[in-house]
Length: 291
Length: 344
Image 1 (cartoon, each protein chain N blue to C red):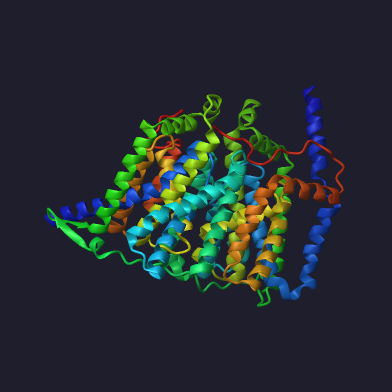
Image 2 (spheres, chains in turn red, purple; image 1 turned 90 degrees about the horizontal axis):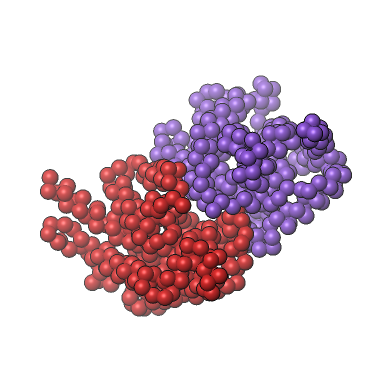
């Protein structure tokens, strides 16, 4: 009995770590969708970029894990900024079909380019020894690396929430998400805000990709494999606040880990089905009031 | 007054329904490849199948404005239905087609209610979700589908009891082309009917369509079911002519590819899917001969360029070209771009 209780707690813990990771990966997408109504299926490509930056720096140059993380953020952020200013911004006013086609095209290119540059195999990274293993806390097995992820992602969530609610930039961003036209009318430079947020979101995705390389795996098909997860987080969580996607990520993370543990034969079936049910019953997301 | 409008609509539809010279040429050329390109029948067979698949997507995307990222669900279901049927002794190809169409239509009907609501994004996610669920089911039910190994041991009987499938793919191509042609004629008839007209109005403005008394939801359910049946037939053709079905038929890239095919050819005039299929397959053939592993990169690049260059402008150009060839004299205000209706 006590064994199974501990197993439940361990699963819960792993699920929370997984969910937090998903949140960091996907929250940039929430802004893209919420602010510009842009369906960006290529979001995972930025995460993959971050993951590969970390993997390549560690494996080929011997840079320690922690030192690679800032670059895993900055690299995709710059990439995001450049792409946003050159390509994405042309498509904001276009139909969703165009946006989907464009971003799928980007995903295909990213997948093939990474495959060409680094090969199709899984990229393995060697975590520093102080992050390996599990420790026993009150009879619950707690993975050190997962605790590390929860700490970092938790801190990020708090910082993001503070930026959104307490700073001038945050209130402008929220105003722009709520109604871009009125925000523009009030003199808020929506396109500048969007460029900054897009870059920041891409950077966060990159950081998530780097942190998740160990847990999620990292190979050229990453953007396709996790695309649906990011979209679930955003559509189920809604796009007007940060708490919605956050709760959705936690739910998704826990459900996914628990599902794989208890009913492995059912696989991802449950999650997809739940997603469809939620979307059909509440197209505006679980945690939002209908407009 | 109202009878005047009815007359006008009727004559317009009749005029649109006439076959142009370009169209007749198109199908004559397609049929003549049966004799002139004997060594290419395998790839031509694939082109016919992909063309039919893209045609079915055109019915919902081009005519009804439903954005779908999971159209492979119906394709895959049709493929598995036909494959499993043949594996367990019902080797008649036409029976397989009918069963596959019915199976896909049932799934289409059941899931059509899911795409009636919500924004484009919700529709994308729901259709994608349906395809993923189906892929997962096919993966898990390996006792029936063969799982990751694929469905093997399909042996088809002769078509109509007369024509055996041969290794050069000639029978297969003739069969796929004939089925595609027949279904094309049906689709062509449907889109120039009042039903097709009402679909276009729904695509261009669902709110107004509802206001003038078009039963929007019923029409969408009907066309979605029809398109699903078409995709099911395309899948069945693939299963029967290649005598193999793998999880690949349900994969995401199939849904994405068919969208690309349709976009290359142009959305909303039925020939888009067929022309797109030819261009896509030839491109794929050329690029993958040159760089087998990375052809996806170039396909992605083509997609990006098409979108940046203005997909609708390109489509418009192809369409006018086509119209000119088809010898149409109508200079009507042609349909608005697909999926222009945005919901807030």
